[in-house]
Amino acid sequence: MRNLILGGMLLLTTLAGHAQVSDTAVTTGQGDTLVVSALPDSAFAQARELAFAEEYQKAEKILQVNLIRFPENNDYRLFLARVMSWQEKYDTARTLLQEVLARDSASVPAFDLLATVERYAKNYQQAITLSDSGLKERPKSEALLTNKAQSQVGLLNYPEALTTVDSALQIHPDNKELQQLQLFLLNQLIAEGLAAGIGLDYFTRVNSPWLNGLLQYGKFTDIGTMIGRVNYARRFGDQGLQFEIDAYPQLGKGRYLYLNVGYSPSELFPTWRFGGEYFSMLGDTRLEGSLGFRHLIFSDTNQVTMYTGSLGYYFGDNFIQFRPFLIDQPQGWGSSYNFLYRHFMSGMGDYLQASAGFGFVPDERILNIGGVIGPDLYTLRSQYLGFAYQKLLNEQAYVRADLTLTNQEQFNNPSNFYQIISLFFTIGYRL
Image 1 (tube, helix red, strand yellow):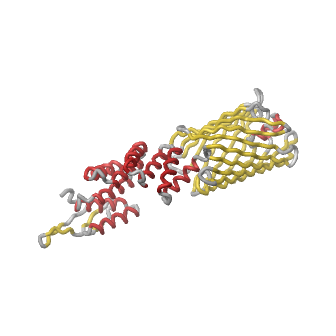
Image 2 (spheres, helix red, strand yellow):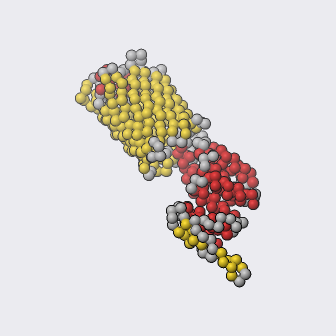
Image 3 (tube, rainbow, N blue to C red):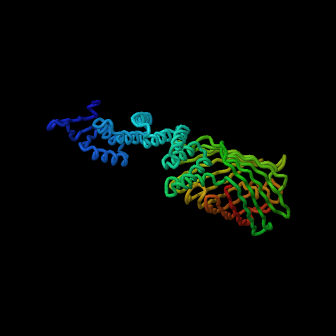
């Protein structure tokens, strides 16, 4: 018999020639004293209740007592391994599971739990390898399919994870975890596939309405999302195109870059535009910060550089963000201040949004109004209020509607304002 003392005493008595186990008092790491029932099923039930209440150390002590009493019982060893994994004691959990597999190499629960432990330990590739190995023998295993998909998410392999989830849901359509994971992945892959949009800018005076449009294709790659886009504009009786590429390289969980380059042969857009921004979650908080820039080249003598950053906060199903722009200009520095609130309905791609800003709004429509940039334009005052609604229609399609109201100081006539009412509709489809 091993380890007769586990922070307390294990009492054995002999009655009528048979060994019988009495209730046992054990002391936990917090100094609490627990009485472990002499009835093994009652003790096991007590351990499970404590574990599910996140009283892990108490559950651990009870399970250790049960294993001393009944060292051949793999159910106790399996649940103890699970409790250890919940406490991030992965080495101990692996040892216990290997003991089970040494006794019973065909133990399905031990194999499934070992794959899960590797995922918890962030050994995602090892977890996928174990899951694939198990799926060869049990291709419909709910636990292994779920573990494989979750591990693929851990590696940021979202398209592969969605394929695994879709296949798993065909076999287990009522699995809530798989349903939630599918929704998460659809939201993460919102930009993948084709999207088309059309919009109108209506001016209360000064200009005739402007027509805008876009056509884009997005693809999630090993390094992150890549988006190619063609923008269309019809303004001042003229029309033109702009070609853009956006990239969102993933730098690890909670960290990524935004990179942008654009070119246009038309005077309705900047000849060139460049942008870059670094985003990161701040420590273990729900704050997200960023730093970046935007640079617009209209001609050799007309260029605008804007420095920006953001501070955002996630709470519940909501996100708020503050974003300033500092504009480098010959007369000095200009600035604008922007606020955003987003309420998620089911994930990152399904939301209601409100936004507002004031100062000098860094909008290409305003920068290029009249087809030229004048030195006085940089100091024009502007305020805007915007609303957006984006909705996942199904596993492949989404729609988005934007309404923006802008109050803009008039070019060549300061102190006089006109208003812009902008509507834009987008529909996207995953291929």
